[in-house]
Figure (cartoon, rainbow, N blue to C red):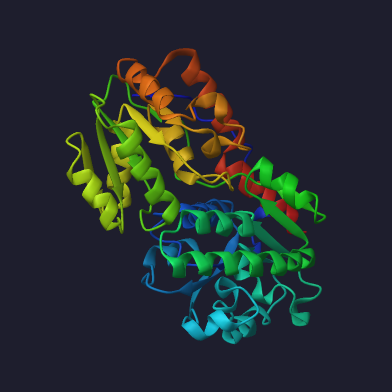
Length: 387
């Protein structure tokens, strides 16, 4: 297995020890099996490794309590989301108003530790006068109204399309609450530019992720791989695009992995001999498939934030073939084979199938990723912002 040397870090200074930080998470971040919670989980882990005592507050709606979080955090608290159609009538975004909790506020008010709100979703309490004077940070996972607008375009049902459109409008109206934050932590250079044009104290803190170093298998794989939460319209659209436009008639096997595949995707896979669908497999199996694939194919139809699966595939996989929206504004285009038309993707996939991932291209990948996406270094930058 080819791998790059691990970067050297300075020893953790005494100033980082005995720090306390509240983190308000939109979901239970373990297991770290989808986009946003991957960033939260590995951020918590990196901060804990520096000696920061993290007090984690999770909104819970479907995911069970996670014992492994107790080993990482000084304390872990869970709060139910206030779901239900009546919340849709509120003038605030559904994703925000359903995450309000007075018991959480009571806990936050018991001390004066800094607070990190994970995403606009968790910012119901950000402007609460009772928190004035506290150091408050917000991790911006996306420009949310752009993200929800793109979800509306990809939605297939009228109800979901209407919901996403309304939510996008509400999120845009709610976004000025970020002016209350001492720092907004943008996840990509593109998002940093957007938030920096609207708010002060915006910094780029790259996504946290599962990998410490670039570790790409030697040799050749014999299949291509796509993975994502298939219940998300964007990912369903991307998977259908691959089956219908890219791999149909291509002499390459495609494995698609994810949960909640649509009936339309299942039908398309069933009639396509070289495509296999793997549903509801665990994170470890996803990582194994990323490593073993010869090509990780990652089309996207939303140029929002940064896709955590892109980082995983670049750190652990061989070749990455994607389109412009997947890498736009990330600074990672040079590390991928980027094509916006099906024929270009087909040609690139065929070329990659017979080519090991090694040499100068892999060295450049390690240089870029381990410099910019060091979890420890980026956690140290957050600590510096806590005051």
